[in-house]
Image (cartoon, rainbow, N blue to C red; front, side, top):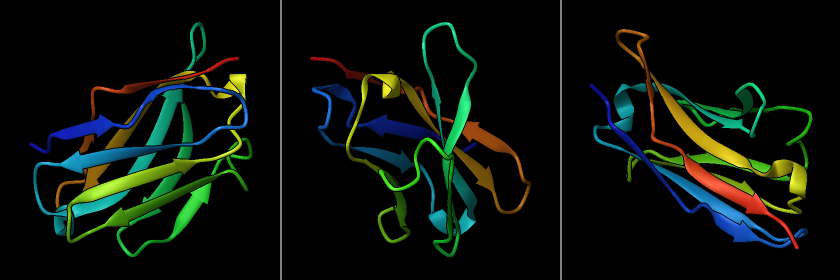
Length: 117
């Protein structure tokens, strides 16, 4: 059972930046991919970014050029750097980890990001 703890959410003005963190309870050696999802009020959860075990990344169109996903395997922590934030980025952000051995998916509790002036 992998436990994930997100942090770094908060309130920011449009154009601002935030960096989210996702700390895992076990070694990242056992984690295949880290996905970042978000869910805005009244909307479905959507995939925002993915970072693989070797650091390859993929982004939703809405995140390309503004968000950067990364992982520090030595610290068992993944990051989502978010720049040029807009009110449309307001959502609860979740990280999700897929086990390398079982392909089971685990979820964090989520962290709220609010972008408003």
